[in-house]
Length: 69
Image (cartoon, rainbow, N blue to C red):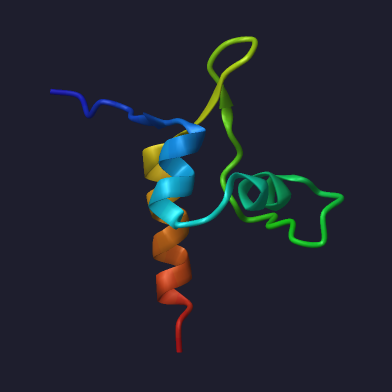
């Protein structure tokens, strides 16, 4: 059986990471001083909807965890 891809919507990502919506969009905006180039890019679901692959968010968190001292 194939693993099913899970797409997290904005509300899911901000809830999981305990951040605000503006923080999330700052992390994605290369012009923002809070830009995080290593943060997963969203996937366009439709003309007006984006989401993030759960595996990519989990891998990003795992990388952050492994960088701890």
